[in-house]
Every structure is written in structure tokens, then in C-alpha cells.
Image (cartoon, rainbow, N blue to C red; front, side, top):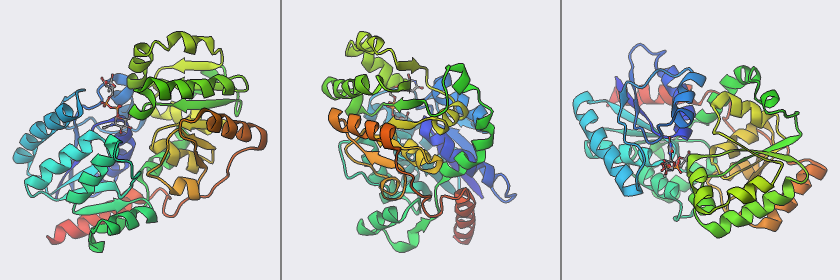
Length: 366
Ligand code: UD1
């Protein structure tokens, strides 16, 4: 059985790593790792291969950045050539980035079955590019592997037959649990001169937060208040870096003595940084899940989340980009501690195992 696993952007790497590892344990599976090159920097891509002990990609498409249409189209054109020559039995895509949608569309048009890992998540906000990617990918996938009951329900409501939906848990958490011990060895906390629980961590890159000047300003205003009470470590995403320059925010940021700008981090450093933090501020999807498992309070700088289980069961609170709400919730954590939360069902480190078993059983029968 030949399987092509697709990775493209940073948040794909930690989802594909446990799948590749599990597939390679099965003699009857030939697993191919394909990287579209959507993210290509050392810090956005390469470091994850070494941190997660991933094999080098077997196939690299090198598509790079571009407009949504341009990037999606480039991936499709290149991926089609690969599919025609490799003829895989199934294509596995993860998450919700442009590469996920592009590769699933290309495969289904060649009648190659698609398995979508992390299916069914919905923010119900169609202005998010990721929401469109999720809807399109799920609608053409043959195997929909979900992380939570709400995702199962979303898919059923969209008319996806129950036999295509498999509730398997969360591969991102497989990776987190597998790497906790290794991450303990990272010296990032000392290197940045920090003390356990005496700092917070910020990540920001959603177009809705950083592309528009007004929203970004509102968040900076909240940070100005928060950094008076606690250090904020801010690994800056390339998109955000570009927007800081474009909005001419560099001076505003420099004035905040406790807002500490650093480069994007590798997986192990970032895991260590999060797990020792007092709380995390983020607009990322995956970080909402990781903080739930680490039991670190998380304030999500978005109006909605496609991962509601992190709010109902985990440590997450949705604060949007409203200055007062962000400051109030951050102060509440500083004064009273945050939500403790509990571990969502099946986030137990064995999702990849379940997925590979299901693929083997079903594809073998076709
Ligand atoms: C993408 C995903 C998003 C994910 C995020 C994580 C889509 C629609 N979005 O958003 O879901 O949460 O990745 O990082 O697929 N750039 C670099 N170096 C790189 C990669 C990008 O400098 O290695 C620059 C690009 O030039 C571009 C910007 O960063 O201008 C944004 O990159 P892009 O891949 O388009 O989208 P992200 O915002 O990273």
C-alpha cells in the first residue's frame, strides 16, 4: 500500500510526524513524505524536521509564498504530476492550510482516496482562509479523522455519511506527549533570562489580527497594560514581522520594555517555553490545544474558535481583540490563576496508531 503524506506549513509538521513514524512500523505500507514548500524558512520549516526526528521529505514541490489563488494553483499543478507518476493508494492531508486543500482537490479529481486528519473543525467564520480550506477538504475526503465530538457533529450536519467519519483523537497531542521529555532539556527559559511562571507567551499571525492596522493597534494597546505586570515573550511570525514594518509599529513595540521580541522558535524550545509560562496569548489553532494538555491558561485573541472543546473542557478563554476584555482576563489570571481544565476524550497520544489501523483495514479492502 502506497501512501503520500502531505505537509506544507509549520502547523502541519507536528501532525504528520507521528503518522509517518507509525506508518513506517508497518511493513506493508510504503509511506512517502511530500512537502509542498508553502513554508520554506529554516525557522518555519527545517527546524521541525530535526526537532521532531522526521525523515527528510521524499518529494519537495518548492511552491513558496504567493496569493491564495497563486499558492493553491501552484501546489495543484505540481502535485498532479506527482500523483500521476507515483499512483498512491491514498493521500493523507492534515489541518487546514492552503496545501491541505490544494492536495485534496488534486487527488480526488484523479480518483485517489483522500484521508483528512483533523476533519470537521468549524469556526463558522468564512472570512478565515482556513475555514474555506476545512470545508472544501472535508467535502472531498473519503476518510475524515476527527479530534472531538463537536467535529463529528459538524460533519454529520453537512451531510457527510457516518461511515466516513472516524473519531480517533488528536495527532498534535501524540507529538506533544512524545516530545515532553526531550523539550524539558531545552535551555530556552534560562537563555531568555526568564523564571518559571514569571512570564507569558504571545503568538500572533492571523490576517484578521495583523493585516488591519486598527485591530493590531487594539491588541498592542492591551499588551501595553499587561507588560506592566508580566514579561511577554513574542516569537514573531514572518507575516506579523512584515505587518509591523508596514504599519510602522516598530517604535510602539520598542517602547514596551517587557514585550520581548524573538525569532520564531523550533518545536522543542517553544514547548518548553509554553509549559513554564504563567499564561499564553495566541491566535493560533494548535496552541489552544497544546495549552489545554499542558494545563496552562490560554487567552485566544480571536472572536471564535474551531476548537470549542478547548473552551468547554480545557484552559482556553476566547477574548477577541477587544482591549478591555484581553486586559481583564489577563489580570484575572495574574490575580486568581486560570482555568485548570481536563484532558479531552482520546487526546491520549495514540491517534496516529488508530488512524493507520483504519487506513490499513479500509484501503486493503477496496
Ligand atoms: C499559514 C496558514 C495558517 C497557519 C500558518 C502557520 C493558510 C491559508 N494559512 O498562514 O493556517 O496557521 O501558516 O504559520 O494556509 N513566509 C516567510 N517564510 C516562510 C513562510 C512564509 O517569510 O517560511 C511569509 C510569506 O512570504 C508570506 C507570509 O509569511 O508573506 C505568510 O505566509 P503564508 O504561508 O501565506 O500564510 P501564513 O500566514 O503563514
